[in-house]
Image (tube, rainbow, N blue to C red):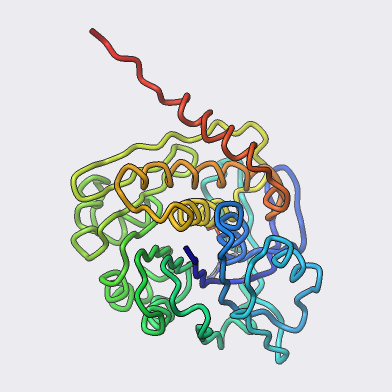
Length: 305
Ligand code: AMP
């Protein structure tokens, strides 16, 4: 089934305790589309890049079979640029620079051939733009939305309006607490689900993720990654893996949602092993499914009699 992805396409500057890169391909739509391209071959990207965007990076998307009909090129300025710095606690990062550039005028126009996409990833962009995407698509089966503290603070009403139209919200624990105005995570999850989505995933950084559906809670383990270099894009890679799997299987049952959470965790665990999207350029199917099995083994709880 086809998958539509809307979000930022960027250049990032990254500092971690293990090294530094001045400028590397990034952006939420970049990570979501690269990771989902390993699971489904119908990945359609919507975003904007500026005059500085390199042919090499365009070729990377093409080499993964990603449809770029919806990638606008605005020659009036440069590509969105973000710079972040991580400390030893890799769950926390400081934003050192954000240059919106052509992203400031981004108007997500959905090409005709994308409008019947059944699975939609609304990457972390302004909630009113996310809603604009939903106004243009025909009859999606499953819409997944990401957001961040920035939009919870700046545009809470628009965010709540968009939330009513999505099936799954993926946020981290601090965002869930802030959105619900509730310190207890379980109560916060209940309050967020009452805002509209049928399912909710709360990511807990290196501690795994919780999936809430109508009647169930599923706790996914975190993979003990040894070679962690750069957490940038881990959240988006999680979303790409998850939605790529759902689009591939076209099955949104609670059981398959559980599988999708693990595939998402697998892709996030690969993402952090190199700077930027480096590790996501040449994964193999075997590596992905081997790691899926490692995840399963991690949390197999023996029966007691
Ligand atoms: P993640 O680490 O998964 O939360 O996402 C990292 C990506 O988000 C980076 O590659 C950035 O380019 C991108 N990013 C950072 N700030 C913003 C923003 N305000 N809007 C859209 N994308 C952003």
